[in-house]
Length: 502
Image 1 (spheres, rainbow, N blue to C red):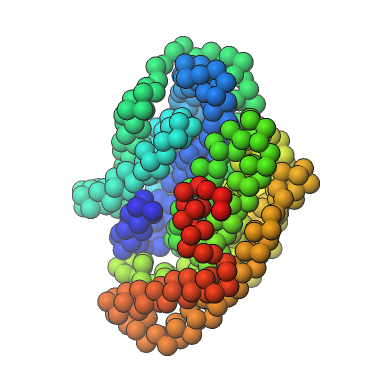
Image 2: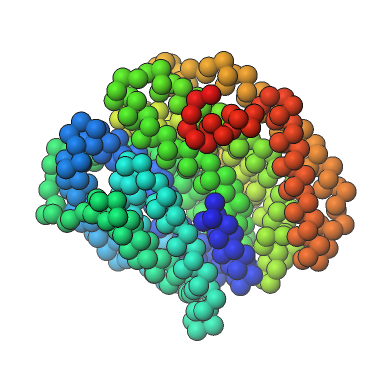
C-alpha cells in the first residue's frame, strides 16, 4: 500500500511535468518493456515456478538443499539475463519499431523512445534477481522485504523528477535514469534482507542440473500463462501508437489507478497463497487446499468488486484530482477517465487470475494455464481490432478487460472440472451479498457525485475535498451494506487477514 501511494505521488509529478504529449508517450512505451518483465517475473511466472520447487526442497530435503537450488538458479539466471539485456540493447531500434510502429512517422519521438528504452532496460537485470531472492524469502515466510522493494523504485523516480529534470534535456530523461538507478538500489536491499534471514546466496558456476532443467520446463510456459494480462497491455501499446498522440499516456494513467487493487489485493493474495497451497498439495491435504482457495477468492472479491464499481461510477473525479495540473488538462482527464471505466470492467478478473493461478502452479501444472493464456491473447487481439475503431484508446482497454474475464473463466472452469475448485457454502452465500452491497454503494456514489458536481469542478482544493468526501461516502456505504447483507463481518475479515478459516 505504501508503494502504491508513493506511485500515485510519482504519477502526479509525471502528469504535471510531462502531461500526455510526445515525451510522455516515449517514456511510457520505453518503460513498458522492463515493467512488463518486472510484473511477469516479480509477480508472476518466475515465482510461480521457483517457489513450489524451493518450498518442496525446503520441506523434504532441508535448508541446505534448498539453498543449493537457489544458488544454481541464481547462476543460470544471471547468464540468461546478461545475454538478454545485451541483445535488447543492440537491437532496441528494431524492437521499438515493432512495439511502437506508429511512432516511426515522428522521428524525434521515436529516437526519444529508443534512448529511454536503452536506459530503462538495464532495470530488468536487477529486478529479476530481486524476484529470485524475494521468492526465496516468501518461501521462508518472510514477505515484508520483497513487498517493500517497489517502494524504492518510486522513491528513486520521485527523486529523479525533483532533482534531475532541470539538469537533463527533458523530465523523460530524468525518469529513465531513475529507473536504471532503482534496479541497483532494490537489488542491494534484497541482498541485505537475504543475509539477515540467514540465506545469503553464493554464485557458483552455472550448470544445468536436473532441478534447473525442471525449473526451465515449468518457467517457459508460465512466462505466457502468468503474464497474459501484461502481454495484452503490450498489444495495447502497439495499437495505441497508431492512434492520435496521447493515447499511450491515457492508457498508462488509467492503468495506474486500475493497478492499485490488483497490486494491493491480487498480487498480495496470490503471493501468500502460492507457498501455502504448495505445502498443502505436497502434504496431500486436499480439503485444506480447497478451503484456502475459497477463502482467497472470497477475500479478493470482497475488496475488488467495490473497487471496480467505484472506478466505473466516478472515474473523472478520481483522474482530475490526481493528475489534472500543469501539462495535464481537462481534455486529458476526460480521455483518461474513459480508459479507466473500460479497465474497471475487468478488474475482478485481473485479481481472480492472480488467485486462481496458484491452483495450477502449486501442482506444477503450467501447460494448462499456457493454453488458456494463448486463447485469451488471441481474443484480446481480435477484440482490440474491433473495438479500437469506434472507441479508440478506450476500446483497447475494454478489449483487455474482456479477455481477462475469458482467461479467468477458463482457469476457474478447468479447476472445477478437476475437483480442485469447489465453491463451499460460505463462498456461495457471500458472493451475491457482496454484489448487493456494491450496488448500494454505486447508487450512493452516483448520487453524491451529482450533489458535489460544483466542488468537483472547482479549484484544486475544492476538488480534493470533494473527492475525499466522495471516497468516505463510498467506504461508509459499502461497509454498512456489507454488514447488513452479511457480505462480511468484522470478525471474519480479521480472520482472513490473519490467514484463518472462519
